[in-house]
Image (cartoon, rainbow, N blue to C red; front, side, top):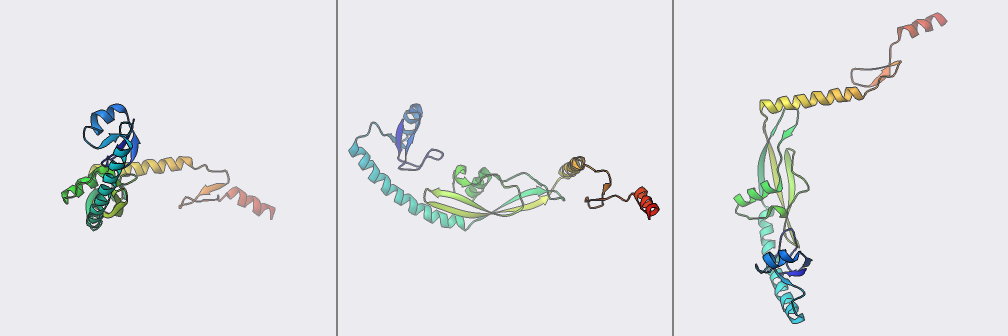
Amino acid sequence: MQVILTEDVVGLGDIGETVTVKPGYARNFLIPRGTAIELASASAKQVEHMSRRINAKKRQLKGAAEERAKEVSSLTLEFTLRGASGGKVFGSIGNRDIAAKLLEQGIEIDRRRVMIAEPIRSIGEHKVSVKLHPEVTANLTVVVNKAKATEEEEAQETEEARANLEASDEDVEVVEGFDIDEDGAIVAADDEDSDEKQDSES
């Protein structure tokens, strides 16, 4: 079933868009809540009238979103993740965490509007985009601070490092006549028999 959205529906579409949905979803959820009208049941006059109302509302929402974008862009959200001495970071910051932190600042944003491809897993400063309107996106700063890892986490990092080292050693194939120096580079082996052979030939 095709419907025209009269409100933004996160995950489905923005106000004014024509989208295809399951009939049950439209009749039991979207239409009763006034967030959509069925395209097939609307006359040309109704669609034209609805379009004018929607366009007026879109302009109003865009203006409000632009004001909110100024507020969001000025924010710096701070988080803390535990980090081991070797550099491994435990935990991550996802869009749900950022939305919750924004709510603490009095700004309610659906987590699906926080545009991050994957959770943040590194210490430092990150730029995160928040889609406030189809035409308005705000960029805020997320700072991830480091806290000391627990003893168990330190042990886990050490064990992972040891396992990675053993795996890399297994991948190295030593060729006859060559050896591996202290830096892990392959070098010609010191072959005493070869030296003796060269001395006898000379």
